[in-house]
Image (cartoon, rainbow, N blue to C red):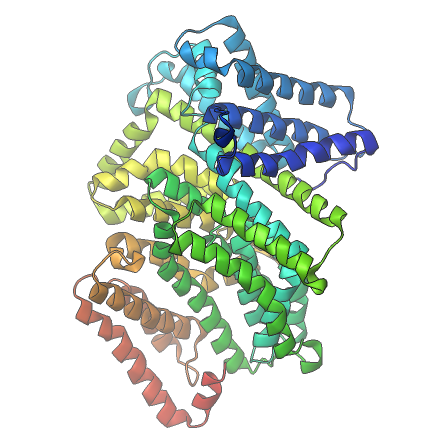
Length: 637
């Protein structure tokens, strides 16, 4: 993602700020259904068309065509692009009644606005993330148009180019479908919440509390990185951005207490990436999942809780065991904030989160309404509490930054919408799913392995939200045809799409962390794979055993959680080579193998969840008898 915006001169800066601030304001008005209360009714597509038009116009104003261009005034062709984007959006907005009544009739005006709109959208995407997503969109369009020249499973019917472009730009199942709708409502609301929270000191409060709580413990800075990066990652929705933000503080501190450069970078990269799958926010993808599955978001967040807990428990336990094994000390106490003061500073952060969670899970509000209510409460608190109070200009700038952040997400969702539209026209999704089932021979294990590889490969260099959207359409039906629950299938795709940020060769989170730690990227990636090993296992576990998503009986759910925690402990002890004392290499291999296998035993019978618990207890007891006082050190973490 290009992170260099133009520093515009005053007239253009004012225009761009007005556009940017209009996006979250529009999201509030539309999401809370303000206009219908005054008798004003607009189609969803009208709103989304205008929303994307403003996003594209902002992209042309703020993002230079070439990264090296640093002029403060947009060149004439960028101004033309921005104006065209607004004209296209305005034309569709004003004439949508007529357009929707004659959607099946292709006319010259529809073709012109569709072609211009798609070209401008692709160029806006190129300016944000380079050619990766643009290539995905162009490939989808090329396949839909030229697919009838192919043979076999990839052969399509003849699709005229005018039908192709109008379907994608004016239809309801492509660019302006569910992904963009979620981006322009729910995602925008949570971006506002995150920005407002950071404005009033929420970011520093979270960071200070993490340091005060964890910094003194063995390997404290690494544990701080896990806690703070998890919280930041869930809110920010970008693993790489999270690494760049929190890693600048946590990685140098880890290095000072004795962590190697590759280990410090790996801890930060894995924790930041894990934030994407951590409830209650789960970046943007959890909301999309709820929309696709037509279930409350609270159901998605509750289902994601156990896998996320196991993910972070694995990271934390490996860090702790490694710290005890190598005697890595905590941070210097003089560097750490006072715990009581840090806890008091967290109160203004906890209150908005409590409002968010209560309205979202307790009252089952729309996620956008919950986030906007929490944002409003945060602003009110900041006005009342002097230490949180900010100048009026700062609040305005926060909404501008929120709008600029939403632009990137909306553009990526729109490009993913092109792929969805082309797949819908060609029917490739269903045919590919049928062929995946045929190749796997009906074996759920082989299908999961093939799908996991596909998710990681297709997700490399592509934002996780876009990856999820594309892969759900492509391979999601294959899962359900083999009896996998739709929630399990979607969560599997989400997890493995996210893991592309950690999996070589294109592991963006690792690259950012390695650049901060000044370590070798591939060596850092290997360390990251060790820390994140459970994230590669648990999706298989919850597909085969819905109890890991809390989809079984209370006994089955409890057995899954128990076996999962014990399995993580066995795997972590095996990978680190330490529990109470050092573990020999043969025993380490046995622990890892037994730990992985133990993830799947509770699926056979809940009582079998006791097997990994007993094995762990036996090893711990045996080492405690041999090691004596060392066991007290391991518990002090």
